[in-house]
View 1 (cartoon, one colour):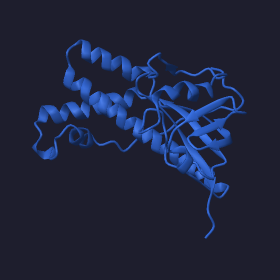
View 2 (cartoon, one colour):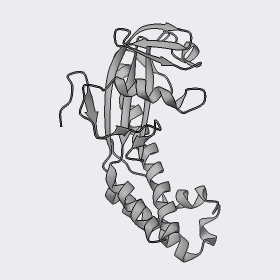
View 3 (tube, rainbow, N blue to C red):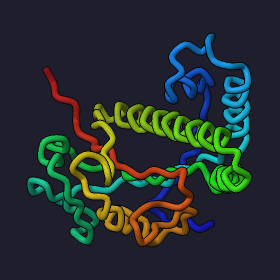
Length: 212
């Protein structure tokens, strides 16, 4: 794999996922009252998912050229991202950290295999375990970005991503363009969704802390 000089890789650690969380997401509010076969399936799919996860994050710091209301100009004005929330949330930021996260193809393949065998409960629980894994991986990366920012007495914003709230999913193309010189294991489809399916993109704004 080839990485461009201004792109790095972070391998997040995924832990702390409880099978009861999977059950609660699917409406089983009291795990003690869940039928053993359902609880055992949730536990088995979590173990399966954890064994398949190959979490990988490509990221880079990009200087903000200018912020014009909803329009964020980056990379020597070669890339423009558009989100109505930028004007408020990125005010005062000097740069952003942009990232692409994936759990790899193995979990996707297993999900397809389960569905093809009509093991639908297993497939649903596995997908839930995967998304919980993505949440844990994202949190791990955010902690790393925050820790790095604090060394320079900076803070980070919450995560922003195409497809969330008012940021159009079509902006994925612009976000991916920031990795155009990097050989990455994530593909952007014509639908602006990512492959592997268990992937996520986003940015964090970085700004100096305000002195009291």
